Every structure is written in C-alpha cells, then in structure tokens.
Length: 67
Image: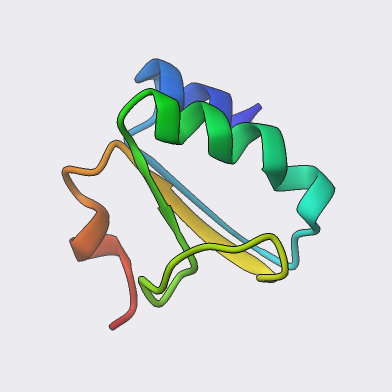
C-alpha cells in the first residue's frame, strides 16, 4: 500500500527494512511506471533479493539514500 501511495503522489518517499520479494514486486512496478525511483537504501539498483528498499518520487531520492 505504501508503494502505491508513492506512485499516486500521496507520499514523497518510503523506505523499509526486512522485506521480502512478495511484499515489493507489484509496488516497485507501480512506482517505476509512475515515474518514481526504487533502489536499496544505499542507492544501488533494487532487485527482488534485497532486504531493504527506498522508493521516492525521484526528486528527493538522492537526499534519502545512504551513500
């Protein structure tokens, strides 16, 4: 639901730790199709094996990721 809110513009960003692929797969697609960005919390490309994620509208993503 949180990723759907990012995609819809209700949330500017969202992060989560300790997640599973089935918690993220559909939401990642929604965010990316809406023009947002999804990575792991360090800013590396997100893949479904990651146990953490950062999603945003893309505008504030760099400020939120741990580089």
